[in-house]
Image (cartoon, rainbow, N blue to C red; front, side, top):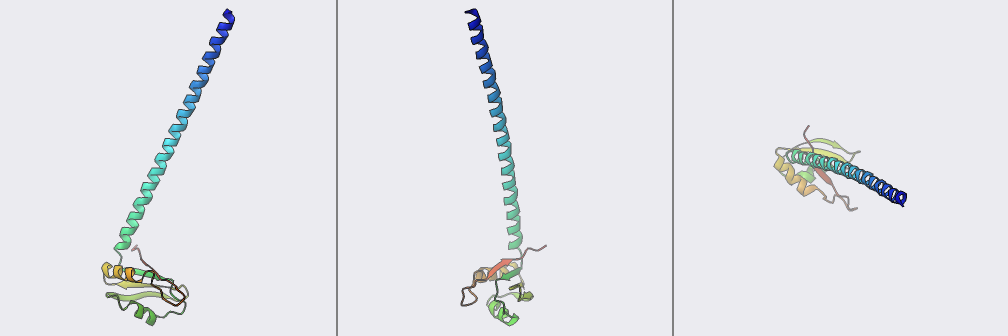
Length: 138
């Protein structure tokens, strides 16, 4: 009987030891998960900060890029398209094969007005829409 009681006590101690080891493993998992979450949060904050800086830089630009122009557009067509937006200084680049153009304005406000008016503008009967964005100054 004494041996059975000792065996029972040994089994209970072994079970406690196993439970303690499992608890340590769970704590380690929780700590690793918390560390991973901290890394993810840091990455998200950094990405948000970069995006904010990019948007600020774009908002301060007086140069716009117009994409998705028809293949056969010309500078004359581009002038006609932009003439309703005051402050245009010059067409910096017009690339027919790439269907894009870069236009400079005398102020960021003038450029912003043009972006607001021209972005998603339907440029032909097929429903082709322009994509107009600020160019980041580098």
